Length: 105
Image (cartoon, rainbow, N blue to C red; front, side, top):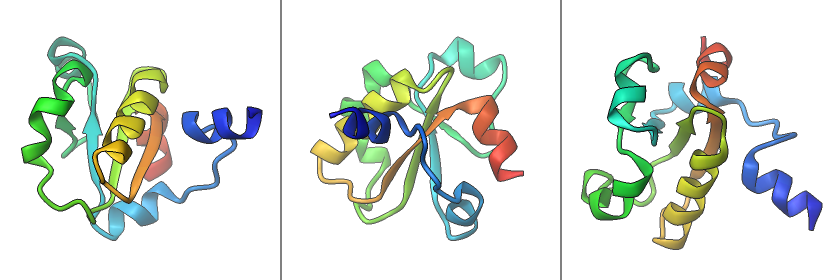
């Protein structure tokens, strides 16, 4: 159970986010518009978590690799779970945007 929770949150994960980006992954930042405007990863797409389900048309290819991020990793974990339940197959929780930014630089 703990292992599943850690995996959902992206904790202890050895994912090479830099490689995913180089291979064409898209970053979806699920923070609010105001949070996103105050700072974000270059080329990230802002779709607030509460609007994600109604904006999946912006994510046309369910085979595309998607990395979710937010402020701390909680909303991005929820976003990952939501996208997986909608049939998106390659979704990773990048956690907090600032931490993810350091991992991909």
